[in-house]
Image: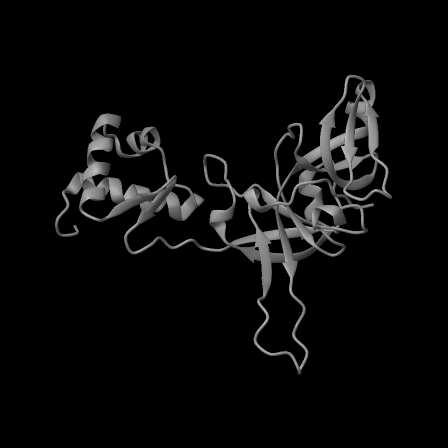
Length: 235
């Protein structure tokens, strides 16, 4: 037990660390209550006392633990095209595996990974800052209006900005030379399969030439809040 904290405070602190380490996100008071068996009111009291002793702190909505928490990197499988059966994507379509900071993405309640990568092809998404050869990181989820979606239109893999019109679903690119895709509502179930929502971007930085000064980073990535606005796609 750490000096200066009670056994129950240590239980709360250890539970917070375990949750952040597993999911990248701090648990709610309700989740802490369920995990520790303590009442939510008691959890809140222990939380305040841990903060007063310097073990926990908040910066806006960000919870920090003194000494930090280890986030094991998340390995993401990258595919070249989508399949209606998600498990089939990791067969002949699997082309790469990359590692990213686990805290960038959400997980389901048991901590299972729900993000995969899709290699972009073509120029339909250049206006969104997503280029040929980039990996878009996709979370398995149903799209909402305004989301960037990774989808199958027939047998063609696309990534586009999703919107719903009175007569059709519209999928927009971010390139004036690439026309939007319209799928009539009566054809959606047969023609359109939205596999997931784009939540990030992974781009390998080219190796520096001998004359270059300094070191190139291995990759750059953006989280959900950093995905550029506008549509994108691959054909």
